[in-house]
Image (cartoon, rainbow, N blue to C red; front, side, top):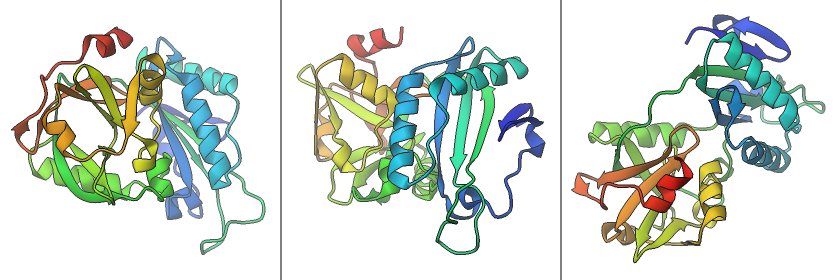
Length: 266
């Protein structure tokens, strides 16, 4: 990646944005991130991203992020400096430097970094493969967008090795949880369903928009519900909503987005 990035008050070439060697985000995954979709310099669903980041920071004991207005200004400048219009911006908040070991220093000096990249066109459809990785509903890494992403990386590696695009994960009780970087929805009898957050689900910003925009049934569901679904689709901030056509090589759903979902991203 080349271009300009923001780090702790400075604008730098991306090749100069390395973290301090003692940064807990790098050494221990002690931090959070957000993936922001930017259109013409403005962040889509910024309020939802900031609310999630603030909630997660509070639960994990991290200093709260800057307010939404200041983040919006930084993002707009970042995108302009990189001569981008439709972009994906990564916001990374770490606990900053600390001594060796697990315990944080008494006073944290958090680090905030923003990087930008062109937004690629979303795929027309996605093929899923069931992962061996399981999500624990008690895991902080499952419920928050932490820097500890090894489970997701391993799940994606397995999926790609099976010729799929993305991994589908169950929770430790065998319920559908979500995908390696997306939430999952499906339609049965015209009704929209998605796993409850109690199933180790990250509360995605696009997921929240759908749940707030229409009736959605949430709960604990076994894998069999997807086999008979009329449509299955996955959502995240980068690509919105994309239909799923396969699970483990077997056809799944209609391969089309439901009209009411498509209308949200028109």
